[in-house]
Image (cartoon, rainbow, N blue to C red):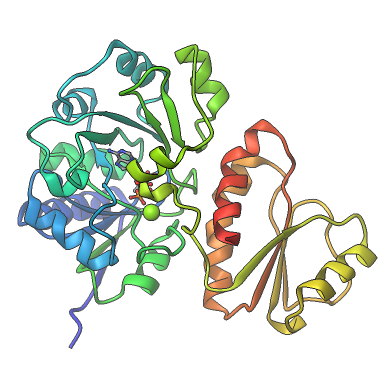
Length: 335
Ligand code: TXA
Ligand code: MG
């Protein structure tokens, strides 16, 4: 029999307090707990306890060579995870923490091998979600947490996404509401000069460049090896996903004909050219704004999975800087 999964709400001060207490109790005992963050939900364990972290890999079916991000309650705890803390880390922390930026720094000996997949660096971030902050202040230790989804599936932005995909595999899920950012953190490697952007996110390359003065974007084979989450096939929904543009109904019709698939199981995600005709099972309008789009995207893809979509047609977002993280995630979802 599968173990039962408890879901705890946090929408009143008393419930919030109770949930912090129960999550901290379980994490201290070496259990894995699904927790809300401002980016996506995380599958958390005590980062200093190798056995607890091993359970994360088991639950997700995550390959052992993919390192896990460590979350800290404050700057002090973040520094404790690192063997060296370059001045640039302080400048970036002052600009973007707490928030959706992960810094790859030299790893402290306190961080077990299993967290970094044996590597000499560790990804650290100080999240802004009030539940995560209260939780880590109570625990007093950093939390290793990848996104709370089975390996290679879409990251969860709501507690119900975790419940659907990891039910029975995790004992406790904390419901902290809809994730505010909605896509995973920006990952920046500052162990090299110039720093390298390993994963684009809603802390944009342009904002980082303004602080660092130089920045490598584009991915090399080497970067992919060190950060396997960069592999093209990642973050994918069950259905085939196609990105396309159209100016009118006729062009949309031609795009759909080209894709094949039956209209009833075709879901169209649009932000600008909204179809009027009945040529899809579901048409979903996402706001034409990168922040709002980022917040909504994964929830829409989860909905496509839940409702058995066969084809997801996404209207291509604009080729503008604020949209680069969204382009990145859509590209992966389409591959
Ligand atoms: O927003 C986020 O970052 C979420 C929330 C829960 O914080 N976490 C998340 O974790 O997205 P995950 O494991 O799904 O993605 C972490 C990414 C992976 O691509 C991994 O390869 C990379 O970060 N990564 C982690 N540690 C690294 C390291 N030391 N060096 C290079 N890449 C690293
Ligand atoms: Mg992930």
